[in-house]
Image 1 (tube, rainbow, N blue to C red):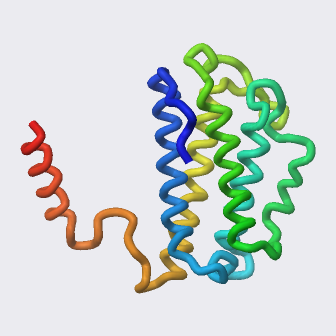
Image 2: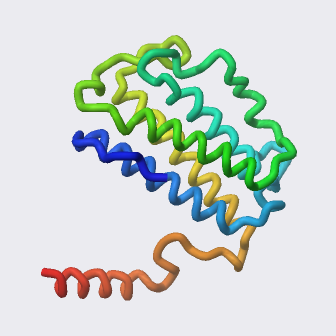
Length: 184
């Protein structure tokens, strides 16, 4: 899901770009999983992909709704429940996931450079807007890579790589260089 408009701020544009890449990585991993695989735990202490998705969606709703004006840890969040397995269809899970990302993009898109030094509160602790954004980029990227690792593990030999396939780096680099030469 792309923001409604891109910001003119290079810092905010870079943050939006990173969030879009994080979402794309997670989405491409999630797409490869069956409905059942979304709920598989690899051990008793692990989280399933569905649980990680619910956690991220809950975090996004809490952090980004009313971002500049209220504490990013909303009183009604119930964070611990995000880590419980619940009976949920793929469609319901995806709707929750997409809603969380929409909250993020809706909050970031209208911001300007002037907003970056404003103060927001997360769990009672003041953060600059810039720090709050940076904190969430790192948090979401970490969980996106957990999703990728779980999906790759669960798919096994059926996994379709999201980057350059093994043994094909040199060929990839040759194609990129040839394309650049042709354009330039």
